[in-house]
Image 1 (cartoon, rainbow, N blue to C red):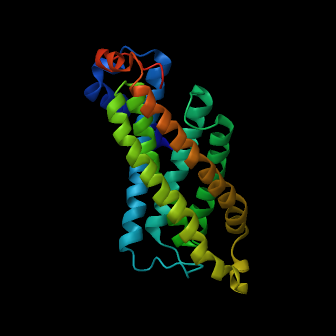
Image 2 (cartoon, rainbow, N blue to C red):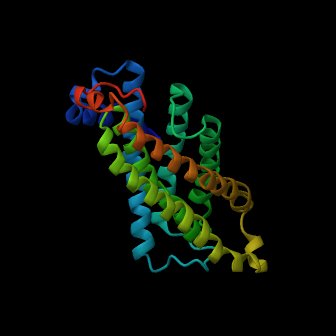
Image 3 (tube, rainbow, N blue to C red):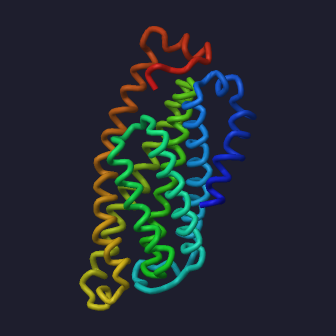
Length: 252
């Protein structure tokens, strides 16, 4: 958690001032704090998501049939995710800023992630499925980048980022995180050995993951609807002038 907080306090503001000085400083203090939070999330999610993808593609011992098999890279990545989620939950609670999702749903999502990350860090069970959960952070990178581009009035650029966000969301959270996840897991549920796993793992699997996946299924059409609305807002009177002047976009 200390390393994640350092990203927000030190690295995040430096990057924002380096690349977006002209558009960052005119923002209100609350908006600047929100930009720092988004920058922290982008860096943390990029690290977690990229590591998980590399493990998924290259780790030979990552097998969906393995019930108990400790893969250090997955455990360390999950521990970092745990710290990031704690810091991100505190940031959302304190800032209470608007996102594309319902605030209560977002906090519920974070609480579920805390439980799943804790179980994944210390159990050493079901590494394949834990890693799939970590891979979902790839879409978070583009989600936060999309929101940041809107807040900084990079309106047309945000539409390009939005395509990547919706594409990665569908791939890692719907196709991989729901369809492939249960395709491999259902056969394991039919074995008696599965129910000998640690209680926190079973609680995370049957309590956290279904709710987590349900939220993803609810959020995807909402995100598509929001993206369509943003596309239409680009063509409304005043949108182009707002973008050129570098002012805050009132439709963000």
